[in-house]
Image (cartoon, rainbow, N blue to C red; front, side):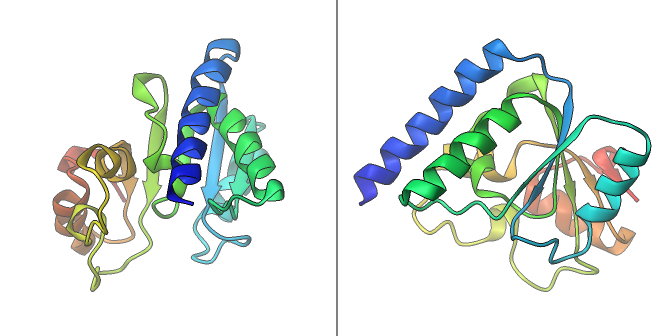
Length: 168
């Protein structure tokens, strides 16, 4: 099972590289970790982008299972991400830990904590994940939108992001 999940990750990375070479990066893609916007952060942003006629797409509820239906969802999500100039996410999304987006895409994390009381980002237990995986999962954020300045120190510590990259 672990071997098959490893192959799935390699396939997702390869598909991203191939699709990114074919498509121009111009969309804003919003990642929602569940079927619905649990934290209520992404849908208002998405609606505002649509009101301004900005080309947007949504990826939600992706699970890294080996069921055929999930494999198809993962492939579609990877292709959508390959077209993204800007990626907006409300939590650490599984595909962020697999794909190295490079400098052609910006990733904006919308913080949903009012004063983090849990371990997050690099301070979370790694559960056997490699340093490379952790850097892709937590270290690719270009910008963070925080709900309060009280959250800034936690964001800088846990996501290795500079103060000037945190917006309120």
